[in-house]
Image (tube, rainbow, N blue to C red):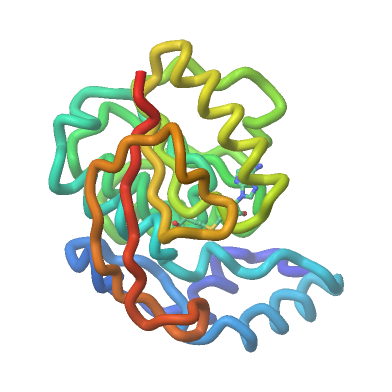
Length: 216
Ligand SMILES: C[S@@+](CC[C@H](N)C(=O)[O-])C[C@H]1O[C@@H](n2cnc3c(N)ncnc32)[C@H](O)[C@@H]1O
């Protein structure tokens, strides 16, 4: 069992700047497989989820870039970074002027990862590991979701939940590099980027990645 998740993250990552958001520093891993194996060994469990929190995913990098360059999207708002992973999108929202950010992720490592990454950037981020999909969306100004369409049932559930948020008046933004379960209809493309990523995770070293809004 990993008692000290913060120590585990510090031992197995290094402070890096995601290529598409160089102004942000994150504790990231270079290779997925050794870290994943180590996580399973240390937890004494097989079948644990991949260490998503140790990478800056293309969808998150694009969404973070968009928020940094369009601060009016977050200025003075309460923001939820849904499926936060490292907390990259949340860090960008705080740097761009959000009033507060709640990072939400069901992976037990994310609490420590988000805390370390908030500290590395001199911002404060809230965190919850509650599955927000089990309840109506919180009444915040913006929900930002980076790279959430990589599994069919999850994508379907998240998108339905985000539509409820949108119908309640929350601005909803999604960053996505054209994942299999990303819906092609019903969203408004706000920006497109060529996001450098890692061949550790992706089929291409650069992923064309969009930032999309759910139109009100
Ligand atoms: C591909 S990663 C994206 C992380 C980050 N947003 C980024 O773009 O770098 C997907 C994340 O979704 C999280 N996730 C999956 N189901 C979730 C749920 N029901 N609620 C919150 N997070 C969830 C996973 O734990 C993982 O951290």
